[in-house]
Amino acid sequence: MADRRNRRVAVFGAGYIGLVTGACLAELGHRVVVRDIDPEKVRVLQGGDVPIYEPGLGDMITRNKERLTFTLDLDEALAEAEVAYVCVDTPPSVSGDADLSKVWSVVRSLAAAPHLHTVVMKSTVPVGTGVRARAALDEAGLTATGYASNPEFTAEGRAVNDFMNPDRIVIGADEPATAVLIAELHSGIDAPVVTMDVRSAEMVKLASNALLATKISFANEIATLCENTGADAMEVLGAVGLDHRLGPHFLRPGIGWGGSCFPKDSEALRQLASNTGFHPPLLSAVIDVNNIQKRRAIQKLKDVLGDLAGREIVLLGMAFKPGTDDMREAPSAVLASRLQAEGASVRCWDPLARPSAAEPWLSARRYASPEEALDGADAAVVVTEWAQLRDVDWGRVAQLMRRPVLFDGRNLLDPAEMRELGFTYMSVGRP
Ligand SMILES: NC(=O)C1=CN([C@@H]2O[C@H](COP(=O)(O)OP(=O)(O)OC[C@H]3O[C@@H](n4cnc5c(N)ncnc54)[C@H](O)[C@@H]3O)[C@@H](O)[C@H]2O)C=CC1
Ligand SMILES: O=C(O)[C@H]1O[C@H](OP(=O)(O)OP(=O)(O)OC[C@H]2O[C@@H](n3ccc(=O)[nH]c3=O)[C@H](O)[C@@H]2O)[C@H](O)[C@@H](O)[C@@H]1O
Image (cartoon, rainbow, N blue to C red; front, side, top):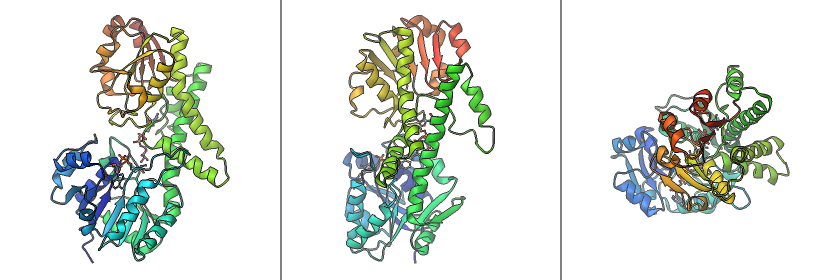
């Protein structure tokens, strides 16, 4: 039996989760090979660079380069591996269910591994995937191979810190020995280890994201009620969150939640429920509130500007939240698309975001600084609460803009100050 701090691990997928998992497992003392099918990603990693923005990740990879390698080659990844981590993307399919094709592709490819004894699912998958994975492993001749669900709760922009300092490590395994092995892989991390059956572990991940999304949609709904009644949502939610039974987290009202996971995971959970014949009313409302929230920004601009056709509108922030370059399901993409549909011309600024080939951005103009983007514009929307926006000389900007109209979709700036500077200033749930 290998030393519990020196396992040979293959990680499949060199994205946000695979890279962080691989680097952190190497940091914990294991020998890790990360395999991806994207040649460009692997080339960048082999050259010593990191293809995504994640604080601390580059240093951790460099520090562990003796124990951490990257490859395109399946045989190289499988040659020594005792444990295989599946960290590939599980995007929404046309039906809204999670598309597991990449997961199955990895699981099937494991048949050729000579030393493999454990497969760990880190990708977020529907409840019941473990049973299908088990069957696929059996079919591939890996009957003696243990299987575990080990969902990940890290948030982008702080994933390395979250991985090394988690609130809990959840392990779903059908055999106790497999759960013990996964727990040992994490030795060195000080956190409660919660073991359960595979289906329950799969559900913990979806339920956690759904509850976080629920808190935000609740905050957004209360913010709208505050707008309609003259209360101040920041005061209200701040005080609500002081109740220790409720907690202050994920109660920040804003322009709606986005990102690579909340939108797809809440929809996947809703479809999972529908597939069992159950329409989940609360989850459906949480998703609806979020969709409406993103569109309310357009109405607020129309209330001030009237027709948006021909207007120059600036989106300040494109990433789905600050501290990441990730644009997946970013509210900015919905806003850009809606504004363009209204005939507006969209400008944007973001210090990090890496837009995909997503259609709405093709005709948006990206500027190097907020000031350049705002020069001559008719209105602006704070979409992402980048700290840099606090340092903008808003007094000067009020002079530069054709009309100083600002919808602060993240309640980043001070309403009184902005109005004093001459802005028609709107925010979320604040008078
Ligand atoms: N991004 C996040 O913060 C979190 C993501 N998750 C879950 O983790 C999973 C991965 O998410 P991300 O890392 O964000 O996705 P990602 O899209 O950044 O990375 C996935 C990687 O897998 C690679 N890949 C696809 N097929 C492959 C194959 N057959 N063999 C090897 N590599 C392959 C892709 O080329 C890509 O580099 C998803 O299920 C997601 O829901 C869970 C918690 C947090
Ligand atoms: O499954 C996942 O991928 C991850 O999804 C989220 O992490 P992440 O998407 O990186 O970002 P969050 O910080 O949770 O923010 C998600 C969205 O909610 C918004 N948000 C967050 C908090 C809040 O109070 N208000 C609010 O509007 C953010 O602006 C952002 O658009 C969860 O926080 C992680 O625990 C989970 O592992």
